[in-house]
Length: 331
Image (cartoon, rainbow, N blue to C red; front, side, top):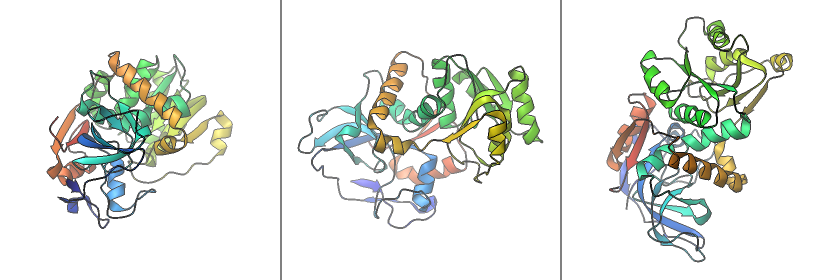
């Protein structure tokens, strides 16, 4: 099969598509013909060797591929050849075929396309766990979503609205305003203000009668975390999703004490490994909301497998909006 193979870690520009051995399912495993796999920020870390979980080389990157079951190993009885599935495979998606555990396969709703499923994978489950599990969101609360025009940000906006929250979208580029508003944001704040440390809090307070945000979801880190912690309401919760802006911030924890604030993190792959029943519930909720028409896909840019390096560069350099999807097979 054709696959993007990592034999040595390095820059994404050097990632090439090669011939690679077809996967063979062991007991409890399935093989899918891959129809779509999202290109995610975490892939940049994996390919450069900077991610905390790295399989032995050579390997094929690409998390949560979507496709059609083509072969099953011994003991597999919940899925069968021909089933359309989303997988929770941690790698292998940048290829024509991928291997997954039977328990990590979820049958797609009939009305969900491969591209939509791949577009939602990783972004929506990350946002769901951040919002519902770590932040314990409640009906009527206000959530500030940083990096709101990104994949996880747009997912968080839609999920928050579906669950009855008020959403403030944090964006650095005013041209993204329409995108986040169409996703459901009730208001926007400018993350590019000169005095972000005070300016973000002032904007959030102005939108919340001086209270602040009950929940902050932060995929950016860096200076944005430093500013956002000041915009959290009394007894509010801030959830760290990532550090897309660069530096990993630090915090003087006396500030948490003074305002009774909680700060937590979300590493969604741990839920796949440690709490599969919660992950199954999360996926079922996302599929339900999609079928109920409450989740609408962000813009998608589609790439062929041979263009994987270009897709990764476009993601890294923020050249295209919305989600980037690789399509190794014809949908």
